Length: 568
Image 1 (cartoon, rainbow, N blue to C red):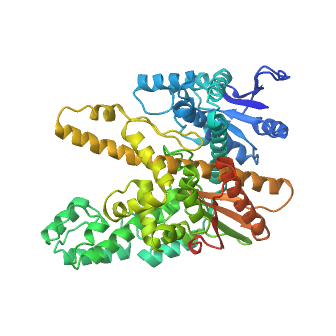
Image 2: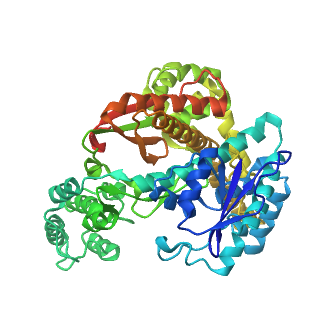
Image 3: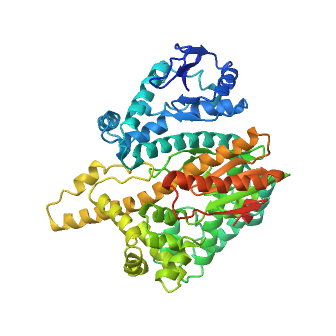
């Protein structure tokens, strides 16, 4: 059973939708209800275990979560439409061709115009009160019905070869589940102890300064830099002033990046690097950040599902995906709870093994440390060399130490290296590449295509360089995109298992954080073992969903702790 949920001028509109060939629903006409009635109606309908269809999860699910309603499943038209519009698996369908024309007409490299969300209202609490006529028409029940039908036609048009249709269907389900997980994690929030954050800042920076003033530690370093660089009025936060002062002191650098500054032995370098590190902490996660983003003992960032072309998540505001180690001690479990932090061990190289079906590398991946296994097979036990070679293969590092080690890696693992090499050649030729479940890389831009049309030797050299750059992108896309597929299934499976525990009356943890290949579960003390089992079982299930029963393990490293800084 499917239920369409759309915005309406009077509140919300719901309509039951059944697949072709099944009996028509008892209420074929849309039901219009007020926003105040929505939670009660949804709670009752959820007992029938429908799949909710809406334009964007973020427009509906947060309101339901605030009403204490947790839904089992949904279908996010915006997220699924963006995948179907660009997937190699559906490129031949009318849906993809129409989307391509809309992109060309609008001169955009994005989802079809009809799928772009309306601009967010100024106040989240006024989401429906501020819907304008254009938005209401665009996201009406009729619009959703047509869009869902078009997407299902595209999905059904995917080739059955290699289970492409089933793989793509799995990706759409996992992406939609991810949208609910993202909304739920924002609603729940990361447990955050404000007093611990304050203490960390004082330890590093000194007492909280007045607005617009530098903390005491930064003021001390500023005074030291002014003296060492003979620049009494230096503002070290100004790149232009800093570069001028460095040059006047004979420090010939082109940038103020750490790696370049370290090449100088001038006495100002050490305090400058310290200033940059502490200034970054003050700017990115200082008192202003704490005031803006932590409330009631919780940090609630907004996650952007599929925010990166490879399918990785991004975040909007608060830097959720970049919590520096300096302040991780503030991420602290509530009394009677533990943080369970789990990360997939060496995910991308293991995904490469599974994608390429390289049996020799699969043997190396049997142990928890894949790099050690690769080292034993082809690099005389030197783990560092094995890691450099593997990362070079996946990221296209063809010079230096990585380039020197590549022939040995290719000789030992021809199937694995061959897979990423083919992806690189496809990218250089302007083709797209695709993840395991069907997310495809963006097509080359018009600028890229024009860059390949050369007339002189100099233009050809430049074109080759640009082509190789795209090849490095597509080389990694097949691995990173497939790793994102696995992570999406891991999350969805973990959510399902934790919900099952709760529905059976058992204590269970809550997902509160996700970063590429790492999850954090906030668990009651008496549910730690069950939550760990759910994490490990979900990882195993994700592997089988993507690759079947293959002789490659996807182990997860698990830490149970009170604070995030002790997890690694």
